[in-house]
Structures are given as structure tokens and as C-alpha cells.
Length: 259
Image 1 (cartoon, rainbow, N blue to C red):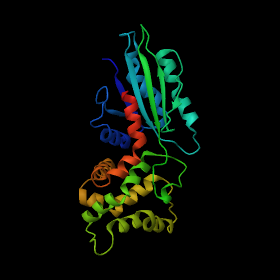
Image 2: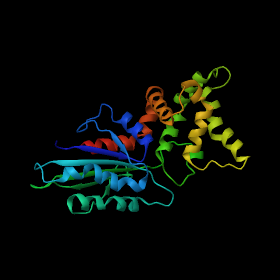
Image 3: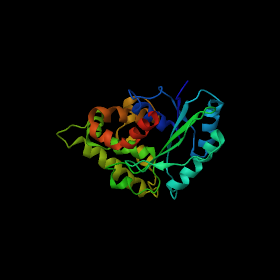
Image 4: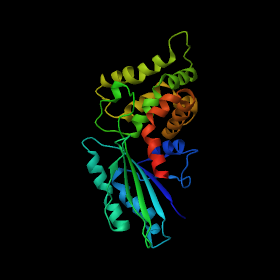
């Protein structure tokens, strides 16, 4: 098949986000994101999945790869790109050369043109960055993760108000969004800190969100990915502008992969 698209991410959260964002978009096909289970597994998982597509094939065929990668503390974008560059050498005999896109510096693209004997390769790399309008408490971490994007939309007033209604907070008592937001960003972190447990990752605040919204009790599930799905669905319905602004670089990367 010409112009096949393969998509990779670090874990289940990326899988849920990609499935949501890729709906109704013009892609070579509707691919399933492959979870590589950790940043060190990207290269081996990608090669295992796509290597067979690089046997001499139809002239003009291009294999497309889209990867979503977190950025750990101390990592630079250049060093992350370098970790992916050997993929081009393994598949086509030349190293990938990534160029940042003008609109989003955290979206980088590398293209190797097809020949009469070998398929081409278009690689789009999305590296997590600080989401737009993220609360100050979540902007303190040196690591950049997909969880931060989820929290950014989860803490928007439209989504919080919907969760507040489910919890049973009455609008006349206080604004529902203020009550839950205070618990997630201040009250629960302070409670844990007073017992010597610091909140030092996005997942800590996501756990606080689970508690503050009584998610497990109300939704009858203990699956974290279900929380992510509910947050995404509610953001698309009740906070459309925030959703589109927060995931703008993700949607741009998906569109670039489909070009």
C-alpha cells in the first residue's frame, strides 16, 4: 500500500489522545498508535514495525512515521532528535535530518525522497512542550509530558464545571470549577506536603484530580486511561477553544504526517 502511516507514542495516554485527535482527519489510513512503553524503546519498536516496508518496492511510495515523545528533565530537543536519526540509516542508508516547523518548534520533520528502487521516508516527531495557559503549579516541572496537556484542559472552567455537577457541588454554594481546582492545585498537594510527600510530577496532580472528582466511585472504573478519555470528551464539548489551543501542536503534527 502506498503512503502508509505508522504512529508511535510512549504509553497508553498517547494512544488515547491520538485516537481522539485523529478522528475525521485526512490521513493515508486510520492508524493505531503503537505504545512503545518508554523512551528507550522507540528505535527498536519503530524498526520492528516498519522495516519490512523498505524492501525494494513501488516507485514513489513513501512510508510515513509519526512519533510522540516526552521530554525529560535536562533533555534538549537536539539530543532527542539525534536519538531518532539512526532510523533513517537503518531503513534507507542515510541519517534523518530533522527541521523544526515554523509554527511549532516542538514539531520536527525529516524527509528522505523515494527512488526507483526504494520507498521514501517522511518522519514527523512531536516533542512534548509546555501547553498553552497551563496553571503555574504545573509549569514548575523541568520534564514535559503528555499528562500536562491533559491536566491543562482538565482544569479549564468548562470541564471542571461538568465534573463539579457530577460530584454534586451546587452552583449556588460556589463556582464548581473553583472548588475542584483548589483541591487539585492547593489543598491536596499541601496535605501531602505536610506529611513529607511532595508533588513533583504531572501524574501527582492527575492523581489529585482523580480524588477531587471522585472519579473511581462515580464512573465505576479504576482505569487511568478512562479518566483521560472522559476529560478529552468533556473538553471537546464544554471547552472547545481551550481544547483546540492546548492540542494545537498535536493536531499540526498529525496533519503534517498526512501530507
